Image (tube, rainbow, N blue to C red; front, side, top):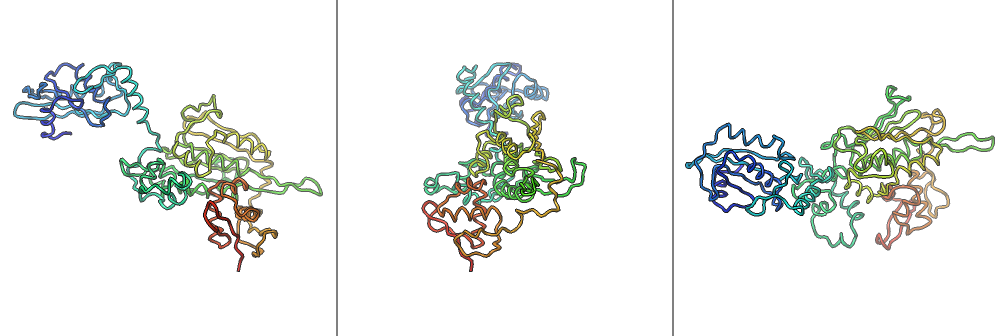
Length: 492
């Protein structure tokens, strides 16, 4: 609220869009029209407006005695239902030598246009009047602009120290911004992050998108922002839990871990007898379909919910459930042909990082991958209002994939003998790293994007595994990113 000196300054100033004075105590229509006009804040000043009761147009006090009944009468304006949406206002009594003054402080509304009994009032300079059609359109557009998505909202409890700044600068900015523009941008990291929706300069804090994507500990601020994996020993949640994990890192870290976990811990390959001379390999769940499900669940989920994204494995199926049902224009009657983004900044960042394509092709891609693997048709439950659920039936008999058997692709992979380098027989690389080395051996100028397409992984997965190969001393980059080439190093 204002101090007495500030009140006197406004009283003796000329009447403006921020202040209106009246000696009347009974003209409720006039009071409510004024409050409505202040709430609409047509000039978009973002400053509070004031209705002063007990002073004339020149700012002279009328000798009013403000009683408790008058205070209650004016305060009841807020919730009597005549002004909608409800205004944010405060009522205060000031006592001066010339009499009392009742001040009604009104904050600008974020949900304009505000109406009094169905009519929109605005202030144009010192004058209050009905809004024109064009002014109503301006107020409507202002409301739309103020309705930021949750991921774009600032997290007031967080600071810049809660973000993985090194990862943002080294991994994300070079992919999200043109290299020449990034090289010429001399602004600090906060301004760069703000341009991508990761930071709020007005409140000097990260947005929720920044924490979800690059937070050091996102669950400190969003309690359900993680993926919970559970492997049950039967066909229901009542069966014994064989394995459980929680992927609680930010998406830029956890999605790569989840991808590797799916490849080596969930998707299983087993030989199936076909004839005396031939065996075929059967896969319980195609890796690509499970990855697509998890990526989409993390992209579309409701991060205001305390429920984690659930990734549950049973003997006969996998269930993925994320909080938040269909959003926006997506409805049960048009799913999956129409989609909308609950978290547009998160969705855009995951596209930049190579995890999703944002072409509304995810569901169809999952179906195609499952069909090619001979899995039964997936089930997508879109009728639950607060969650989205996908059920993926297993391919073939459930007892084929015995957890006690050794999984071939978990073993250390022997490097193919046709690589033009002298390396140990049992090279400590995984399947993905072996595929990367094979592709580089055939084309030492191959790019990250070309590697991702060639081996069927995301660009981020390729980058992480290339970094690992460099750390192991098996690979190096010679020259610039644009004109250089790869070299596979020989072991000593």
